[in-house]
Image (cartoon, rainbow, N blue to C red; front, side, top):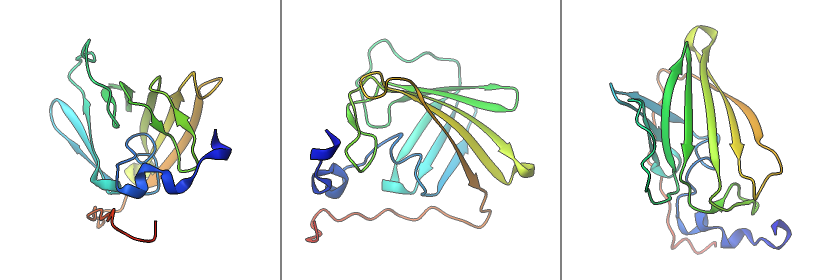
Length: 160
């Protein structure tokens, strides 16, 4: 229950990565690295790394659930389409909104403004959390001189 949630008990306070989609769709910068068989998203937030397999493989039949899930992608014209499943239960936000491991995330990315902006339409499906899929559109601006900084978290910080 969100009303009973104590933000001081959020695992993020103890430097436990919130994972995807919670932190991957936040305001922090990220970098995308492309290889022949995968895309790698490097997130400034918590130093998270996300692999998106682009070689047509399906998710393995048995795969332990994780904070980042398991992502496969493909191109549909000029749009990158990513499907992510195999999430462990966790929080979708810092206000106590829970998901129970039934989460799936569908993302569609496209470039705008001559490649200077990246737009993502993200649909989160979590039947135990939401009565219907939840869709949000996000846009990031390219910063050609930007960089990903080291994410420093100190669980001994006595403020919490």
